[in-house]
Length: 203
Image (cartoon, rainbow, N blue to C red):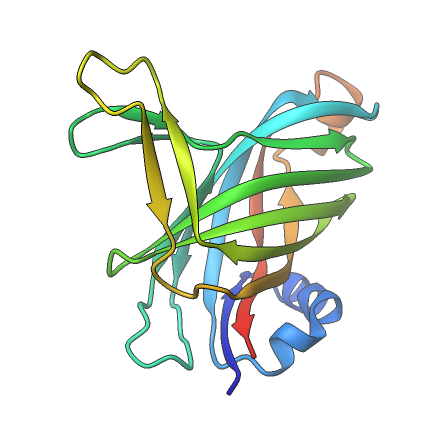
């Protein structure tokens, strides 16, 4: 039995791009949700190839799934600082990349928290050409976050465990949307909107 969850972008052009890049994942999909977020990059992307790091956060809304009882919304983030219920802070794995505004490749670990409290950890990579970014990845069992300046008696790490869509793969397409594309020729793009479609599926 095939199960699919699709994370859908808002713009029709992005949807068409996603269908072209991930035909297998999307052709058999049973539903979808909208993804809208933003990324912060350091140093900013320019017209010169370089190494960089980034963090990302986004909202998933209007979700549908062929899995009965699947949540209709959630959030996704990578490379950010997580604060737990006690106020202790933990660093998510920092996403890394290499390239420029014209083309780039990146790797990271994304953590999806669904509205019902379940979570999905995705080990992913991306390949970008201008505004179009192709993503592929695998849902992994867990990720361990290092504590930031833990006090005596506090945990030195925190493990996030996948509790939904274990073993699935991820494919999709994203649109990289800097507020000022001309920054590529100047100080660099340090923040950008992210919209797109991502399919999580298992056969």
